[in-house]
Image (tube, rainbow, N blue to C red; front, side, top):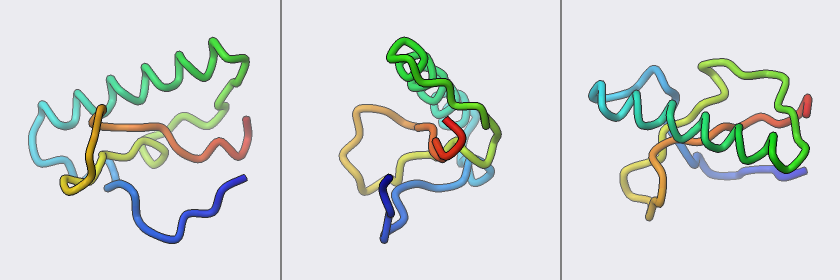
Length: 71
């Protein structure tokens, strides 16, 4: 288990463009697929569990899936 002490992403509801929204969701789906292929089932996919990567962070992706508590 990990505990984050800093914000690492913005809520999906704060998207600034349609492209940012769609790209973040796409990246979360890719992350979900990677977890599934590794034998992990998320079990709690929702808009609240998809985050947009902050602008100031180095990023190979735009969005990611969080909250694997029920996995």
